[in-house]
Every structure is written in structure tokens, then in C-alpha cells.
Image (cartoon, rainbow, N blue to C red; front, side):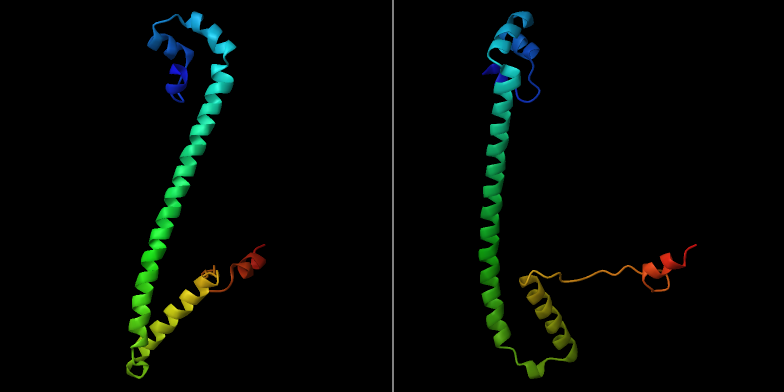
Length: 134
């Protein structure tokens, strides 16, 4: 257990120092009991798995908590939006509401909420510049 518990930087030499034993003496039991090759690696993989499972559970808990908060806030906002008199909104307000509503809808459908176009210095597609290269 001492070898295992020394962590990933463990060595038989460190066990020898900790246990006040000869390193040469400890190489035989380390080999017989497969401390290095089998047992410690199996332990490390199991520890990694448990750690990853713990992180995944924390992420799930956080996602649930954030979803509950978002749902509560959304319900409040929907109530407020339903009370708005659209005839009293100005052109900027209408444009912004349309932009937000469209973005939310696209995200809900799994679509990108924006796209990026790469153009040359004159605004033309880059492909046109490549075609003109000699």
C-alpha cells in the first residue's frame, strides 16, 4: 500500500526510503507482487475513472441547477413580455426583439446563431483572389 499511496511519482527507491528498507531488498517483492506494472497502474486507472465520474456528476448537477434558474427567469420574462404593448415599441425596440427572438429560436433548433465570412481586402470572396494568383 505504501507504493500505491506514493502517487504517480512513486518508485521502489521512495518506498525503500519511507520503509527504511534496502532498495535491492524491495525489488523482489515489487516484482513478485507486480507493484509497478500491474497493481499501481490498475489503481491509477481506477482513481482516474472515479475522478472523471465525480467531475461528470458535478457538471450534471451544475447543469440541472442552471437550467432550473434559467427556467424560472424565463417564466418571469415571458410574463413581462406578454404584458408589453407592441404598438408602443419603437423601430429599434422591434428590431432588437426580432433579433433576440430569432437568435433564441435558432439556438433552440441547434442552428448556429451567427456565421462568419472570410473575404479579401476588397470584400470579394478569398477564392476569387486565389484564382487570380499566378
